[in-house]
Image (tube, rainbow, N blue to C red; front, side):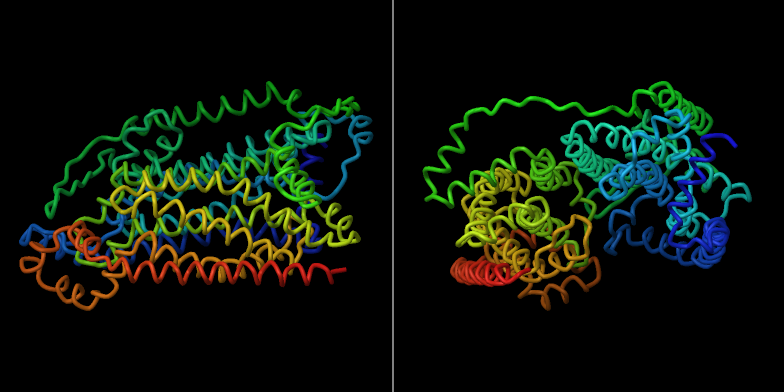
Length: 600
């Protein structure tokens, strides 16, 4: 038996240890799932495609007669689904295995004996190839999901030929296989190095965050326009997209639709590179990735014996000394300890820094003309697209600061908790010091985010003098409420269902209060639209010739709503939200401390 095969077999046994008696059945199910999924998608897609041809002809006739696209459509409505699904397959297939493999390093609980590995005849190549082969079991699951994603493509184009499903399966497998290989290499390197350098685990978690951010930004870049896939010539996702498009449409020419005001026109462009070149480049890319991996495999997976280092204790810097002097002792001393713990954790710093991506996304969407995709519109839903996304990101930006750091009081600092629990007023000092540390770290980040959100929102913003205090307020109450919840319901493990329960409770309390603040403070003009919904609904339901002269774009409606803001009513609403936030923060901390004292 080959060494790598023995490793793969044992890895698979460990993965399926929960179903020892059904391993063969699992293999049969894994093979059957994608076949069944593709069969159902092809059957339904072709059936619905044949029935919608007549409907499409009628719609095209009406558009030609009225020269107007009247219905509201999301971005997917003006692009070819084949382009979007091809991009989705390329990004998802490559990114998700990397995130899963690197993330699995931090979920492992077993201890691998270095002596066994060093004494065995296994080579690094055998271990990594074995892990790679064992992790290929996720391919059927990915293909099953992708089969469902191809359903709208088949509805739009039907089945081009009998070879189409086999081409789609082959092209869908390639990014996933490459992603599994890269993920195995990265996770192995992080795992072996973390035994020597504990800081490597923080770097690994930072890598997961960076890949996740890259995952989101890639979607934004590729979904930013209907012709985006035409210009990313040297991207592997584009090569996958081109092959998918030709397989499902039978042509290398893609239809581009451009909307100007109430009129739209279409033209055709060839995909670049062509399908044959795309396939050659894709296969060359795969070969290059595996070749480079095999060349550096001994450096990636090399077990080292940790060596103790002598560390010189340095003098405390001016910032921590200032914290001790400004905040009364012993609370100041504990707060300084909390801040030191935060500054030593690269993971915490990376997670905090990742919050700044939210206003950048809003700015990028505005810059790419995302809101223009909803113009013209005869549906009020189009008016709330950008404000809705902005509200979501504002809530997440404020909430994540609190919920991420509050959980660390009993996860990373559980030893500190049990120590202070036995001291007089130890629990109060621990909770309040954590709260002060969260505020000291969170408020500067909140100030930067408020400025970035103001620049990103543009004309939708109520002004930086409103956005800054609203953002800082939401960060303070989020930190207090999250810390109170985690004090009342402490969670001592990173992988625990308790985090989900705490987040749901936090979301219900904090997001409700912050939502009221956003409605009355940041986007008060939405109140006018909500109050005028019946009238606007009637006017927008009129025939195009009667209504589009007044409501050709949402810009007029938004401008009218902003001019008619009742600032006195908004101030009262914002004051109510602030009062509720202060009350909820106080009660959360008091209830949390009282329950944490009783926790055993």
